[in-house]
Image (cartoon, rainbow, N blue to C red):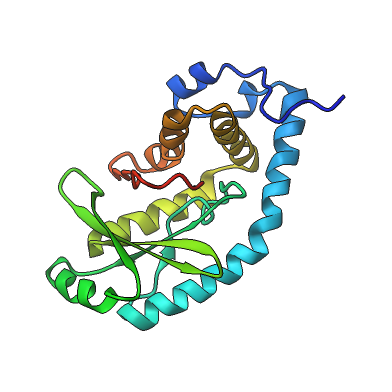
Length: 206
């Protein structure tokens, strides 16, 4: 009999409290399931990559700034329902100009805190039925985000990605949506504690 996808031997409360998931946290039999699940998520990569290229080209055409993937697809931690989170560095003093530029092209979701002293503007639009969230960060924050993402890419192991994605899936599948939303941010906190990436409240994507 196949084990239901949401059944687990993991102590999710302990893992949430620890703020990270490692190979040692997952028994061998469950890790096999977790790895199979992670592999199944990678089946969406080609389409998401194609849409990301299209969305990035639009953003660069509209704003004159080349975006970077700052979300779960960029860190290879996405679930199958993933939207795309792209970011640009944009001068704060030109935000009114950006608002005017994107008016009619992307819906403004609001201003969100990025650090304790800075904010970003968040917009959303759709490409090929996939929702694209665009964050306009300060130029300095965008540079910090780039260094953080480079570090995640270099330092986060395959097993850590499998474990992180599995925990995220379990939290969502069991209806622990507040824990799920918080868990999506632990990678940023681990690799760049000063980067205060507040989620978009009305978003539930992966």
